[in-house]
Structure formats: C-alpha cells, structure tokens
Image (cartoon, rainbow over all chains, first blue to last red; front, side, top):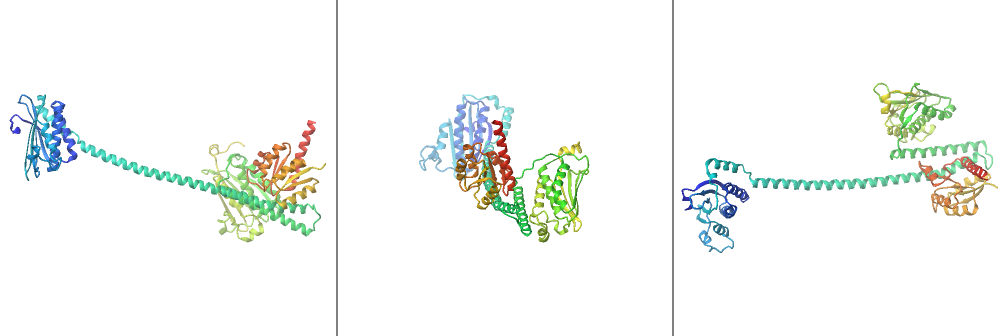
Length: 451
Length: 129
C-alpha cells in the first residue's frame, strides 16, 4: 500500500463536491504543485488524472475527500494522493481496471486513463460503503524546503484565501446576465422612446398640417368675404358720390346705413382674423424702447373725432418723467385704441381718462388704465367681457354696435406681452379697464431715466 | 388722349363697380376677366396702368404680373386684391407691383394712385427728353 509509506508527508486535504467546483480544486492542486516547484509536465499528468477521478467521484458519490502528500525518501521524490468517498460504490470496477468492461460504451474510460497517467494506482470499491483511489507519481524535482511547518502553514493560508474561481465565474455570469437583461430593458426603453419620438413627429406634422389648413381657410374666408364687401361698399360710395344721379334725403340715409353695416362687417372680419392669428401663435411680439405717453397721446388723438361727437373729454394723466418702456408699441396702440373706442361707445357723455402709473415699491409692472363715465358693467358680467363674442346681453350690443371681439383681442395681446388685464365697474357710473406691462430688467435697474 | 386703364377683375359686380367709377373719372377702360386675356390685351391695347386682381380663374394674378413684367417692363401694375392678410402687401410689391390696395377699396384712393404714378412717369420722361 502506497499510503502505508511512513515517510509520506501530508500536504493538504480538500473536499470534492459539485461539478462546478472542480476548477477551483484543480487550481488549488496547481498552486500546491507550483509551490513545491514540481515540473509542469508531471503536474499536468497528475492534475489530468485527478480530474478524471474526481469527476468519477462526483458521478458515483456526489462528493469525496482528497488528500495530497509527498514522499521524499526514495531515489526520486513522488507526490501521492488518496481520493475517497462514501458513495454506493462503482459496479464492475475490477473489469473496468482491467480494461475489460465494454458496456455501456465509454463507462470507466476516465479511470483507465488516470491509471495510465500515474506511475502507481490502486482503486477499491465496496458496494454500499464507498470507493478509495490511491495514486503516485514520481517527480523530477521537488523543493523540500517548502515542506517545513512554517512554509506549509503559509501554503495553507494562501490556499484558504485563494478566491473561489467558480464563485467568481458565477458572480461574473450573474452580473453578465444582469447587464444583458439591463441591455435588453434599455433597448426596449429605447425602442419606446424612438416610437414616442416618431409619434411626436407625426403629431407635429399633423398639427402643422392642421395649422396650415386653418391658415389657408382663414385666408380664403377673408378673401371670399372681402370680395362681395368690396362691391357693397364701392356701390354705396357710387351712390353717395351721385355718379349716376341724385338721391332723395331718405335714400341717402339708407345708403349711409348700408355703408355702416358694411364697415361693421369689415371690422368683424378683421377682428376674427386678428383673434385667429393670435390664437394660432402667429402674432409676434416685437419689443422696443417705447415712449408710452406719446403712444397714448396719439391714440387719444385718433379717437378724438368720435369723442367730440358726444362731447366726451379725453385726458392723459402721467408724471412728467415717465421712463421709456421696453414693449411692443404697435400692440400697445392696438389695445389702447380698442379700450378707448369701447369707452367712447359706452359713454353717453362725460370724460375718459387714461392714466399711466409707474410700479410702486416691489411691483415690476407698469399700469395703464382707461377710465370712463359711461353706462358701466354689472358685476355679474365682468367675468365674461373678455370672452370672445360675449358682449353683455344683446341689448347694448345692438345699440352700441361692435364685434364683441375687441376685449378678447386685448386680453390675448396683453397676455402675449406678459401682462394682465381686468375691469372694474359700477353700473351708471362708469368702467375702468386696467392692463399691465412687465418692466424690462433695464427698467427695474435704472428705475427712472431721462426722457 | 385719355388715360387708358387695363382693368383685370373676374367678379362681375366688382368689374361693374370699378369700370363705372374709372369711366366716370374719364379714363378709357379695357376689361379683362382672366390672366391670359390680361396679358394679351396689355400687349395689344397699350394701357397706361394695369389694375390687377390677384386671384384669377386661369393663371394667378401673381403669375400674370411676373409675365407682364418680362414682356412690358415699364408698364405700371397696381394690385387690387382681397388678399389682405399681413404679408400680402409685401408679397405684391416684391413681385413688382407699383402699389397695393386691399379690398374693400376706397376707389378714390385707387384713382389718386393712378394719377400719382402717371405724373411720376411723365416727370421722368420730361427730364429725359
């Protein structure tokens, strides 16, 4: 018996378990053999033989125990091993060892090749008790210094710290799977995002097509309304100009009514187009440094002929040193004209006052208000007046004319410039419409500057 | 010799109104109801000014203006159109129209424009003569 040799020195014991751990066991054996400086050729022979036998152990007994030892007393040093298990035993082992077992094909070939690779080999099996294998391989060189206790302890230390390769591989594989899964999820997410973008693009295209259609519709509507309106107004003018003969006083009055109705229709067309363009986002705000009092004065001047007919007085209230304001002059003028003509319309007599006020402390808005002494608006109606076509019940609308879109346009324009608009009123005493214009950064910093 | 106007207009009532006020003004009016007729008559009738509707049944007024400009570069064309949205004026002037009126027009303004344009032309030829 090889193991009976008294000079055999035990190197290391380890358990042989799952198939997946064979690599770690092989690696530990390799480390031990390297440590003893055993030549690679002999290392390989031993390791291949042990691999076959361990696979066998796992197959028949699921687990076993491996002990590695060295013999240094012979003419040549040798490495020996003992591999044992408590499995059910290997049937037909003797026939296998003699190379006589043929069925099923391939069974026992591992044991035979192990036997061939080793210098000495013995194997015993007891049915129901277990199997033992002994082997010996002579080595050309062995560093005997490594065999003292200190060195062997260090070796054991090293081996116990040697990372479990299978664990690493498993953990790597798990990580790899995780990454793969993440990649898959990412690619699904990406596809979703791409689909979303495609959808947005399609929606955008649809939207801009709808917008274009709306624009084309508005342009055509405008054109088709203006064409007959041109006939109506020009024909009325022909009559008024008496190109084809005189009119009676009554006829002249009638033609005047035709003209007024035509003008009203034209205003309506213009207002509808304005509102549609604002709502479609086609109105650009172009801000410049603006002399606000001058804009108000001009607006007052252009509304004055209307006011004079009703003996309404127009005033501007403003401090002498009003700063330039960074705003859209044309839009402010449009709003002012709208508010002023509204006030004139609903004021039988009295006065209309436009007030420009600078921000009080903490405010960052300029206040523009148009106050009249007109018929006023009932409290319950104040919320509706900025809605399109919501001129307060039908009576005043009929009586005072107008499209009912003016205040709606004002509100849209004010908000487009970043301001607010509201109205206060008392029936029979008058109304005050106020809108704000945001102060530009420069305005706030310099507060009030020259001219 | 009276001032000769080529009036291009496809809506019968508008044609009636405009020719009525132009003739009343003492102008000689040649009528055309589409773009091709306008080009033909511009070459044949030698008008002093063209009043051009921009939406016509065959070729558009815009095309007609371009063609007329190539054939008769000195012929002044005034756009009289119901295209009255922002940008339409600039569009017509860029095309080479000398002036632009949106419908509904005040016809006295159009008549004034005719006089103004012809006076400018006459002033220039007086200097050149």
